[in-house]
Image (cartoon, rainbow, N blue to C red):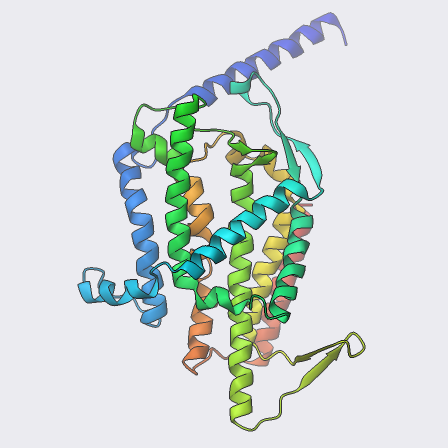
Length: 360
């Protein structure tokens, strides 16, 4: 290159850097500013509780949210329990340990303007942690140490624990950021900064908490909720077959080393479980693409990301699976024709192949 080309290149980098710094430090009120985010922080847990009670106690029918009897009866179904606390926090702790310790690809993020253009390193070991999760869940379930159905049995209390935990982590992160002087792009409004976040790149050891909470907690938990519902449905149908005197077909796997009852989960629940499995699998495979995304580069770690990753996503996106299970529990399962079900599975797999290939 000529000296002139080099000068132009350096000038372009300088301009881009200046633009990044300006963008990174600009304070722009979103979501209606402090008043809007205050309403959202109050409204999200209330909305989630309301919809869950409608789903679990009223067959999915929307009820009058101002009916005190609705709340007095419904809140009992989601009140936190010690078992729910152990399940949820144990899951979080295990996800952190595997994220910090298992092998994976190391990827550099985008240059961070507030760090003078420094590129942070991210350990992307999602695939390894995902397969460890699947093997461990199988062993715990088959060994009777932790039946996977425990998740759906405690789904209401676990959801409440997740919401409370999301609030605790939000406040703790804000306080630690302010006390340590590591805040970034603060607006001057405490409520707004709690919602949007005070810290840009929170880390414990080699784990970036923002990326960890975005990819490891919500999607894996969503799959395990659907898997739990599917296994629960299978057990219900097996028990009904036994009560009706219908012989249960047994599968002999791996040359007879493993015996299990033929799967009797309803096709719609199998569909949801497969869909969620495929999505999580894709997220884990493509984790190395996440460090350069807007969430990691620009968004701070506040209530918006923390609450929705810890609670909002897994306990809202699972409504379909829970509804199907509830219908089965009421002995009124959703039933479709064989042609329709097969068509849905074909469409799902074809769409996944296109989506996964396009993002590879």
